[in-house]
Image 1: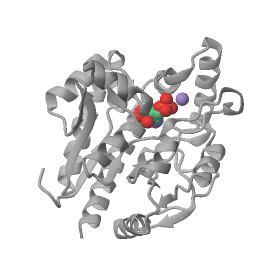
Image 2: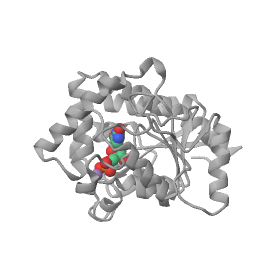
Image 3: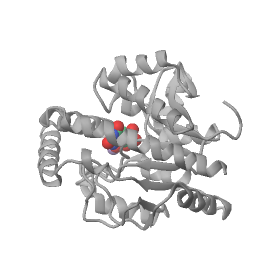
Length: 289
Ligand code: PSU
Ligand code: MN
């Protein structure tokens, strides 16, 4: 990797735990290609044989996709044991941010982030992604948060932690599969240059921490919010009934939503990731100028 080149970090939990094989591998490779076509260098991040890696080979991506749930989902708390054991790990948003920052990468594009789960006042299920956004200086580009989360509580948590939530071309927080959530973002910015300027200002002031950029799914791929809302309610109820908890919750809900929609949600998911990869490349280029 050449110094000064625009680089976009990409995560690997979405490959091993977020989508089924072979769509996961196909999507990961298409996302890398999209970043290249937009003029930046993709760096898919994972733990491979106990080593933190930014930039994977096609064979490594294929392995992460084929092994799927057999690759441990690696958030911040998982890194010590996985690295000491020489294990592989599929990195979440939190861990991808950590490794991107260690590698000097400022921009990271993905699909959705973890957040405050519905019912968190009882379960205390709050993703480590939010804490990482508070402490690690990386711009994370996502399509908002899924309604598998409590979006209002997620925004409150980010506010408390001092994480700016930006809407790209929108004042409304996008809700992953659909463009509307009924919640407002903190600021609307309209160009990659504006994103770069805000991120630069944050870091130059020494505020540290990351920035969350929410980029709505393109209209032609968006799902009906009422319909997908009902599906998500069903998936959350099923997870509750089955007693699913901890790190299994998010992968279970993603798979259950895809199952109930017979793949429609997966198609939307793929499109929004490609859309975020494109914006990630433009933001990374703007940051090098
Ligand atoms: N949301 C999605 N797709 C995903 C994830 C979240 O729409 O693949 C993954 C990301 O890797 C995210 C992780 O960092 O799930 C959050 O898991 P948890 O809620 O257990 O922190
Ligand atoms: Mn959790």
